[in-house]
Length: 349
Ligand code: GDD
Ligand code: MG
Image (cartoon, rainbow, N blue to C red; front, side, top):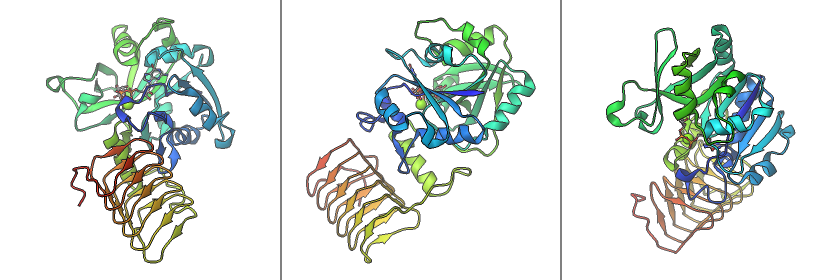
């Protein structure tokens, strides 16, 4: 048993964060995102993992190498141009001619993968798709199931009037190698619009797995990226435990840092500064009386004295001037410089 992680998308909805950092390795609580997926696989005993890349592949390879630092064996395939989700799987065919777990490379979950695999095997399924409930399925792939767990219908990005159920494709599949034969070689092809409808037409054994009490979020938009942090900091992700919340950093005794916040190494938190429910990357400076709340700061950001950053995300090496107010929903790209006293218009009071 092995795994393929689809990590070749451009991450357009997460711009500007993904301009210099590909989505699969954006930091989540100061750790490259893919490491959480690698943990999920390793917990299920899967160590042979292929990463399917296309956008900025070298940055990912450079960071993760052969996987030995993380207790797994990593291999890479790099498409000359994005081939689509199923096209990427087909492109990796020489490396995955056996039963394979496939992950969308932007899902943070504490899924118990062993149970999914056990169920797939017990049913003798050709394909198993994990589902999750969401409030609004329009941004996802809607999946209707039969009583016995078979998939009845798959509808990618349904319109509001096409929604029949709240269960959607959670972006985790177990696939038997025979499905490779249903995907055309050398073409752009998608699981969602191509392979899954094909499996249904062919009446293949295509089953759904609906896990109980499982955390699930697609980190692919700024709102959800921030939400994933707040959920992790708040301890709402059952099986994912944060490593040390406090790195080696310098803090004035008169600064306030709440219990939930995570602070990276080599930060300076100055007197009167407040850090609340936030994740601060390594090497950040929070100057006198600055306030950072419900926010994520990437490494080497400086928040000037009396400035406020509330409900926002800042990329690497940003500079927030004195008394500036960065309000909810703001997302600053790497190296953004905000002039003293600027206001972003959110309710960052
Ligand atoms: N290698 C490669 N090549 N990877 C790709 C390509 C490609 O051409 N296109 C997309 N990916 C990767 C992305 O990097 C991402 O990790 C994953 O495939 C899914 O692509 P997204 O662009 O994030 O899709 P989505 O979020 O709109 O929808 C998908 O995920 C939903 C769950 O979050 C679909 O699978 C939906 O059905 C599903 O509900
Ligand atoms: Mg996505």
